[in-house]
Image (cartoon, rainbow, N blue to C red; front, side):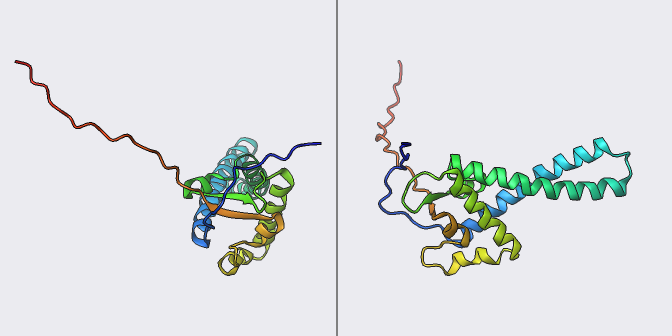
Length: 169
């Protein structure tokens, strides 16, 4: 029987609010968009005859497909392995399971399915985070997750000794 890997116990955690989550999401979408657009532009430039109309329409179509596939891979794998995307790391928030166990592939995929549902409603389902008691969106409920503020690590710094200048004569 496979043993469930546990996340270190969290006694209290501050739930991440809508604005922090929105900023993290925008960072992720911009990064994904830039990468997908660049790959799409390269592929379409390499495989078309240089016609600007065909190239630009091909770039948009290819970028859209790459964005959906890239989003699925990016969000599910980053959350499965780190509990954070690059945007969440930048903002200092993390996704955890409601029972404090590590996210699995099925949890990450359910969460991504919730993202897709939110995209289909023009992001309106994301707004549930603002009114939910536990600040959970539809995607959080689907995957049984919370988004928390990553606790700051406190480092004990030894008190510095006063500097005494030694004068050589």
